Image (cartoon, rainbow over all chains, first blue to last red; front, side, top):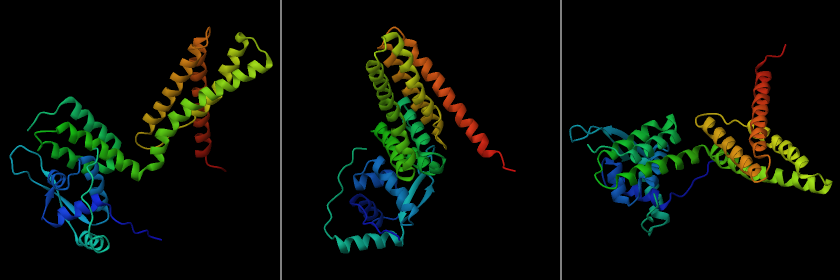
Amino acid sequence: MTRTRTPSAQTLAILAALAGADWLYGLELADRTGLKSGSLYPILIRLDERGMVESRWIEASVPGRPPRHAYRILSAGRRALADAGRTAPARSRPRESLA
Amino acid sequence: MNRRSLSERIALGLARFVAGPDRRRWLDAMDAELDHLSARRLDWALGTLVAAVKDRTARDWPRAVAILALPSAAMAGIPLVVQASSALARTTGLPHEQAMPLLALASLTLAQAIGATRTRGSGGSVLTFAGRALAAITLSLLFALLPPSALFGTIAWCAGAWLGARWMRADRGAARTPSR
């Protein structure tokens, strides 16, 4: 039996941030959601594995800097965000995690 | 590009080790972002390590439990063994000098059990070494508190761990030998 889990407030914050933009870098996502890298990336990895976001490498605009990993929401992610919005319309902003 | 400090490099290196080769792409992603940060760079690097630990724990929880359980078992088990053998020596009325070999022998069995323990996969040898080292330190410290045989603990530990590892190798060898 497949268990469906309600996305956490942090997951929804990431999905919402991605829904309001095209491609976002990890740092931009961290700024928009208030999450630290220690919380942000495990969620991004999970969302990527579940097909809710896609990622790709984008060449840096500043010469000499390495390419950056960018993220975009997919239809499954938008659906999860919409479902969560229907079941819990007033979610609070995620708490700042320690790392 | 900002030059990386030693602490940032250590944090990222540890994160790569913890995350394992399956997560190389994600570690590269977190690593690349660090080059676009001018402030709070160490926070980001430490966050990378936290992310690696969280992710590895979530997908590989039996090994995460083992990482905590093996040294804990060594720390908790050795004093218990020593306490039991001390109680036995007291009830049988053995003098202190004769009780020491009994303690060493009792500890040897636990050292053998831990010596036979070996976790597989990346980080397994480090985990095994950490568990054994903790057990050795505990055993040596306990025997150091019980003079005059401070070396008993180390000797018992080395002998037990060697026996355990040998027993495990022999067991694996027998398992690999095809039956006729």
